[in-house]
Length: 221
Image (cartoon, rainbow, N blue to C red; front, side, top):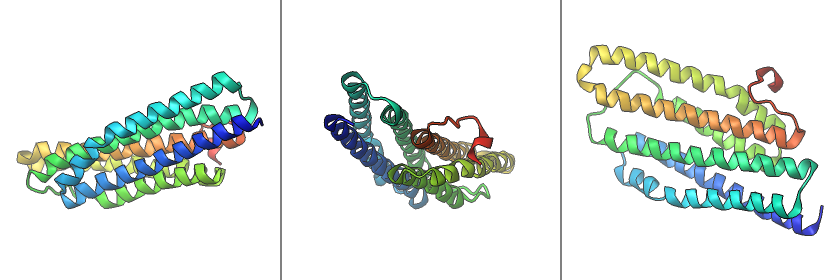
């Protein structure tokens, strides 16, 4: 690999890992703002989203510059292609963290509702998937990436359970429909974060092994 290309790839990896760390913080703080009904923290997440958007654009521009100047091949090309996709997924996770923060502001303004749903368990599982997919990227570990892919079904099941619980709660507490809908949206946002974490894990597998496993559950085995 030419030294200039190696330097560009190392800088790109640092940028994407820094972005990943910021996204982890956004998701963690968005979830904490829900648990603690912390409006100030939620607003901070919303206000800082523009910085993440700018970083996402910078990473994309760096990828395109490397493709144009160096025309990488083989594993270097796979790395750039995967980073382009991972970058997009991270930005979307950041947006979903903002969405959760926006729901948090509303939920903090009304009486706390109980949909008999373990929000803490779902949020922990989602955060674990996000942390693990980024660890897989740092360590270039297919094993960790596969764990993320297999965990996704569990979060999907939790989201379906939440939908059923909210349906029941609407029947018994029609006065709390707005709050229940916001709570359901939080569940959906967590499920989507898990989906994007799975996308990142699949891209790590592609980066390392050169095989595309998206939409192929049997390929995780």
